Length: 353
Image (cartoon, rainbow, N blue to C red):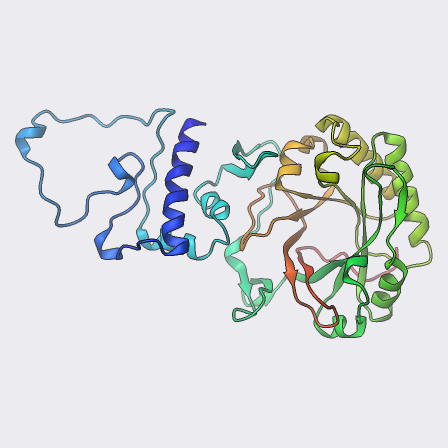
């Protein structure tokens, strides 16, 4: 842990220089990063040579200790990482392939080793392409010149009135519609005020529909109740994309689920998902990185599809997931203001259940 913290401090300082232009040095004036050398920079050509008399006895190379980390890469690669990162957090993650970097409840960086017992994703995020580089970011996943990702959005009453004909014409192929939520204080089940308008408008314009519900269940019975609430709402409609349990912070961390353990929350999640599956729909779980890492037991959720929220230019979640919410500030014709943008790496289809 000490080596991660020390290295992170070095990276944060360097990220400030590279991301925000604080005193940049010319590439010809710098070598490559090496955290085992003073200042983290290797000697560059033209430095004064070392007096051989000072190193008469050869020094045997030693393995780095737990308090050290050694990394060496060209400065051009470092600049590439900085240029392609949306924040210091993302920049730091680029240096770790077997460690998941995230922030805990208090905003402190956590460095968690990848659990190799869990199923892994195999996406190559070098294949991400921003198709709108001069405007609001819009990403596609392109393999061998062919776009294999599917463009989607998620909406609720906060998007107000939506022109679904324009949304469809803008290339949106699927939408995740909020069915409702459970009150974080009262525990009351509430339907989203725009649910009917949204599902009818999307289906009328051949936009495939999935559903999400924001949970505050504190028992298996309440989790099943939430599932039944959603299933009743969608009875008249063709829902071919997943039905999602949305797990996130509520009430500033004071919601009724705030005291649940990861084991309890996982049990209630599975109760919801099992109920949804009974009726022939695909259950799914929506979380950001912290909730996946700290608030759930992923070893019990390997058979549940996952929708991962992370607003990086390239995500880092080594485990299996099929959908990625990559922006909360997207722009789509037919929607006033911002909307969440998503990529799906799986086609859940348009057919009947």
